[in-house]
Length: 636
Image (cartoon, rainbow, N blue to C red; front, top):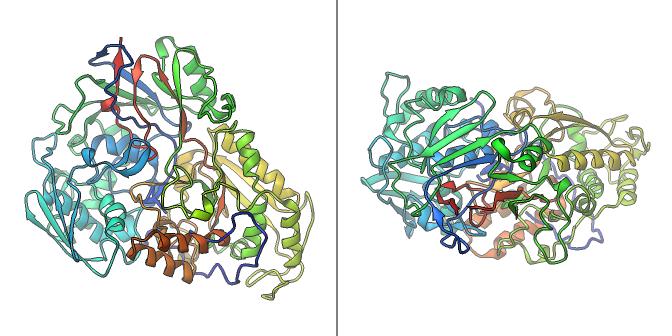
């Protein structure tokens, strides 16, 4: 049985960082979208209900046609998702519309818990005991959402989470609870092992749970199981549900996926990847008096294709789409957006709560992984990322500088004070990159490939495991569809060539790129991996783990630690931040990890420059990217 995304435990930081004169460099630090909840970030737009129609009259009903992110289509419906499918487009553009998580996050422009949209009241803590009281929700088949439905998810996590949950972290949930039981039909009680911050346990453990209906507790179409109470039943149930989740064409008519507790049910799916949702007449939550009745998501192969449809209007009109950053007007000083070039639409910039990065693959058996493990190399490589130029160039002024492993925007108390200036701790500096490589034994061949001429572990040698003649040549698959991503990747390739780093860029679809994250290669499997660097075009949004304490992305062995980074002090500081609600504990971890560069930082681009038609009200966009189209309405 494979272990999440654990790809071995090869030490990465074998040297102490060399003091460097850097603005804002102080050291520091997943998922997922915690959940990486690992989660992997691709754009979407979320709405909150608005009671003001701007002087116009709200009307009931209506169809909204919504553009999916370029070259991205939901491809997994089961809300117990492995790392290969652990993406925002699956979670927010599909699963959360149908199946509500136990706790909902995203309240206006903040990423914090939204009690009104949660299935349960805020948890109560009494020492090591946490009590969850469910609200009165029902499934579309008439059954109530009960404590057993919560247990169903937890038992599956206990049985197969280590292998098949994208947000799995060693020694954490469910290993950090000693017991869990249904006290009544509406109450669940857990006993926590050890000391943990209550806010962390709520935001990063309980937040992962999505209650699952008893109608899903089958190991075949006709074989009833009892995973809810018998853990040994769960593997067969998971295998059955997972197999049924892989064929989108079967989802609308499925007796499994049609049992929902969310505000929407899936009505149809086209072979081109379009999804149509209709309101769930049995939804137990509160809906505004006037709201749309049909929500359709349509795919596009590129931003340009979407933009052409957005501008054309007519019979193929998009009600909610997005403006490519390469076509966006530069916002004037102090403004969030520039003048909208699309007539008849309102423009909003939406940034996701997370970080934007390119992972290194430290665990590959490929000899290049030994180079990536050298801290001096990662410092030199970060010197070649020109965040300011990417923001002012292909992003047209809409990006935010990434400063480290905690989200920079929106600014929250979680971000260390030293990082709040927004200054790039590693500003573009190819001269320093060249100097670092030469100092550590590399013969620089600009526009060619630099080679190691002083192998060995010494302070002026190439580093442990790097052999004589090793070449600075790497592969970088990247997701196509977003013009700024391609421009940034090609700029990095050009910048790297100045010091003899050769990057082979490989254009692929989003699903092709993220599909390579499945742990079937590397040291743990004694098999080379097809990538050294990987760019799916967004990074990581803190869904479903919303407190950015780092255990999902950077703790040794975590499923969403896709590059298999490992550092003992980093692990120690992360674990301390989980047990202490003081922000200083998180800041200490951030400030340690930041200069160690376990990832390549790139600018936080807008998840979308959202265009919504003038007579549609979609409300405030959520930085968690959670969609609530049930709150949207038309006006006349």
